[in-house]
Amino acid sequence: MKIGVLTGGGDAPGLNAVIRAVVRKCLANGHEMIGIREGWRGILENKYETLDRNSVSGILHRGGTILATSRTNVYKTEDGEAKVIKNMKDNGIDALVAIGGEDTLGVASKLAKAGVKIVGVPKTIDNDLSATDFTFGFDTAVNVATEAIDRLHTTAESHNRVIVVEVMGRHAGWIAAYAGIAGGADIILVPEIPYDINEVCDTLHKRHEGGKSFSIVVASEGAVAKKKEGEVGMILQDQKLDSFGHVRLGGIGNFLAEQIEKITGYETRSTVLGHIQRGGTPTAFDRVLGTRLGFCAAELVEENKWGYMAALKGTSVVGVQLAEATGELKTIDLQLMDVANTFFG
Image (cartoon, rainbow, N blue to C red; front, side, top):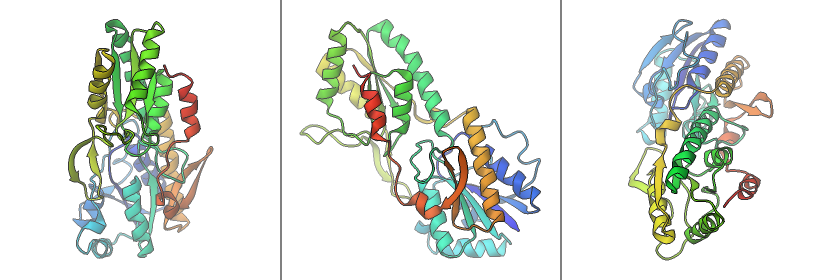
């Protein structure tokens, strides 16, 4: 078969490990491999390149994706589904391996129902995809955020400041929870639990009155305030929507810093980690997980398990239905926040 591989949505450390594994395993099984440039945009616009062993040599440790990516939605393009099917047929592409998050795999799930031979690989640093215990890229993002929190501890203590660290996490607070616990944060704010700014400040007051001169607050970009007069929900960069209907989040770190300093009188600063969490070398865990997921995706192709996705279940990597993975977001286990609350203040 002639198999196309694409990466969609935001980049994540470990993407190249997946591409490498899919290509190497499928080539070993006698298939021809085609790289589709820029995600779903590439198949709509016929942007392809041949992939062989040399194409994927030396990419295991590299961040980003050698195939480039975009946030293109096939189903927001006129006759998008028909174009995908036609372009695959015209270029002799028999099947697809789609590597992406909720949006990319949501498109893949719809295409599978339309008869396209397709398998998926879960990718999101937010770790919010159902049907898999962890997604590659998450571990790297947590390590980057934890290192930042470690470094901010020393400057916060030196200047007797409160520092707010804004991390990624639109609707799920996995990065904030894990990095906050690992970095010894004094308060962690996640989208799943609306916060009360006055309760946050009360906790900081108790901590400082108890002898501490500094504090670290970790907040997911999608954390929301309880609905009270003068307070807001999600903080947005602007009102523009992408092709999947998502607004651009960002700014909660600065917002919280201003509110905390105004209410408590403590000097407060904010740090926004942003795309630093996505970039650079993947951790060993993400390299291995990406490799295993890519290998499993190639096996799903060999077994003709179309409409399935590779997933981590416990210590095993298995195939699950795409519909199961994209049915709903995986939010954090609230017991994790019970653990974190023990160390607040």
